[in-house]
Image 1 (tube, rainbow over the protein chains, first blue to last red):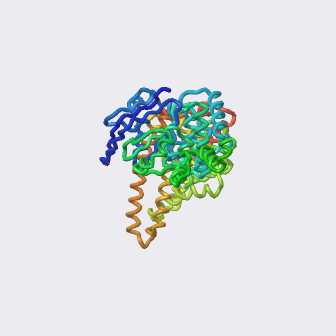
Image 2 (spheres, chains in turn purple, green):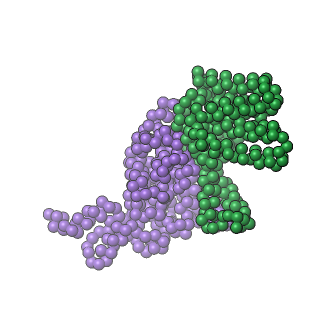
Image 3 (cartoon, one colour):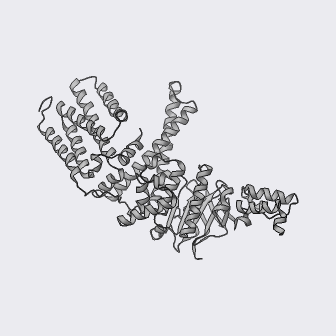
Length: 281
Length: 240
């Protein structure tokens, strides 16, 4: 898989003289990959995303997105990037949901028939057909996030960046968003970069994790590799998902079991523990 | 002031005024506005707001909401009249009616036209930078109003809201306004990036072309012409 994002040891100084050095490992995203950035508050997650989006220009280091520097040549890549920020109100532009999804398409000069077809396709994909004529101000938080996501994917981006997309969502809406993001990744091969501190959902949304602590990329790996390193997580002021902790405790008390990171895997392991004879047969 | 409700009316209601092109609606509203601002005749200053009131009501504007929108201009024009110490009841009526007509014409335009159509029309004549600024200002205004209202609620909850704390209250209000201003700057920076990613290039493209004219445009155009004629032929003080 081709590399689409590479961030190498960048340095940024905010106007209040706060210096953030995102060093350590390189941050790399490949085509179609699902990446999660984990870190406590102030770890540098948003600074990293701001560099990837070209909102900030690094004082030192290198940021490459689709082979160009986003802060210098943003126009070359903007069509290939979709983004959903934490505060979705700021990114809902259209007076109706339909107009909002169509906004980017119209700006890039798509024909009317193409706009109609694409909006219908996205609305069906995200299950928001019933919202198309609604005014965004009166939607619920979860619906607004879905509409923002719809607007972000309207141009069929190759990279979708989501900054804390599950913040403020109830469990049902959170599950909806997770399945939508995974569906987009599976169906259209969109690479996703998600920042979150909701560790429990990470195994469901990412196959690669970067752990940030005080601006440093401390580790990267699969959810299993990361969540089984207790010391690393403690250093990064994070906790392993509840399932992982439960199975670690079981293992600590002498039960022979693997460490799961997702619900499916945990279910299988529990079945093996409860009905060991079935496994033997 | 629930500006989101104006957006809601503009985008969800049907009716003849919503089927008109933006150019004819703008012609009607601007002719009403300019005639009222220039007029000294009570006939004009009563009949034009009355006409606009009818247009607003048939366009689906609930009377209570309309009262709410009219409250601000009426309140401030009355304050202005009182400041002039009741110099002349006729002058007071003229000021009050002019303010009412201005609001009614703008409300009519906004409740029948999605804001993107309006900015798309302006974009055809104004430089990109001005249209972008107006567009951003309109979008940010919603969010800042919400922020301001949240901050004021917060002040009230923390007990520093009321006459007994008037000095502290004024200081706090200044602080709130300052923080809202800083938020506005921050927000506009973030929004400019988001809009750029979504393809915004200073022009707004909508499904309704402002060049479109239909039979529905006859009503606002003829009404606009009638209002202009009324303005020209009416004499100050009374009848035509």
